Length: 123
Image 1: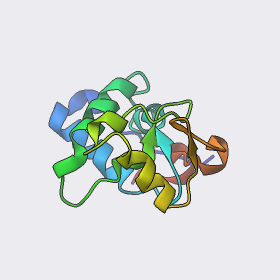
Image 2: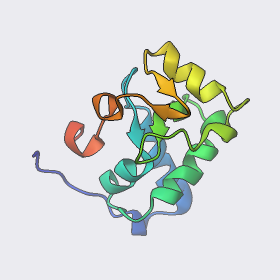
Image 3: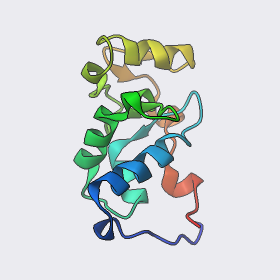
């Protein structure tokens, strides 16, 4: 595992934390997904997956664009789908990226899972 330097989310305002969440979400490759908890853990706030979810709920109007459709719960379920323009949009966006969804759950979730803790290194 790579040597990582963690940021202290406690020292940031909620807006700063949300911005850090958006920065990580923008790094998720097309055709891959991650979880709220994986982002929280990467940011050094392992118990804050719900806060990451709140950030994703408000990601729709951010510039540059945040691919919130690539963030799901720890079981691969599309729990954030109701925060999109319609409840099918999240699935449609994922399927455009060749991520198959069945009954609101990512098929072969582990195959598509992108773990920022494994893939990224903080400066």
